[in-house]
Image (cartoon, rainbow, N blue to C red; front, side):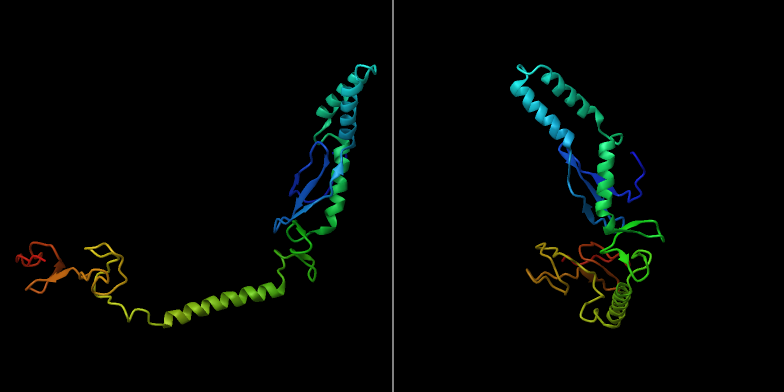
Length: 218
């Protein structure tokens, strides 16, 4: 570049063959600010020479040569080495610079509209707006109080916690929502059986694991 341009490093080049344009982004919220489109007059001249060469190249000496030279120069002039593009970039920076602020606290370029705290002179990452801090603190306190209030409620009294839970019926495979029987087919959901010795085991076991007695077929 012809001279250093001090500005945000968060930008993208959206220039094309017809002209120059850049998009600059806030380093905090990524809001995009696009510079005005600047016409590439060299490209316009090259296009005019191309048209004239196609129309009158055979009748005007040197026109083909001039058109080819313009095409070659245009194809190899570009990139950061171009003084023309450097000037266009500097112009684009000046167009959008007023929309940004440099935070001395963190070194970020941020947008003035959303991410700058005018009362302090820092970005809202370093110095959040008081209203935002209050709202965040209130939300945190509200969430904590809701958790505490929920812990004081008894949500388990209506459920049978002594029986093994089943989420599907063993007979019809319908989803279950708790209880002792399937609401679809009436099958008992508690498949435990109690032996004469008092030991409980799952239905279908041939013998009691505690005393060895044969278990009734269910």
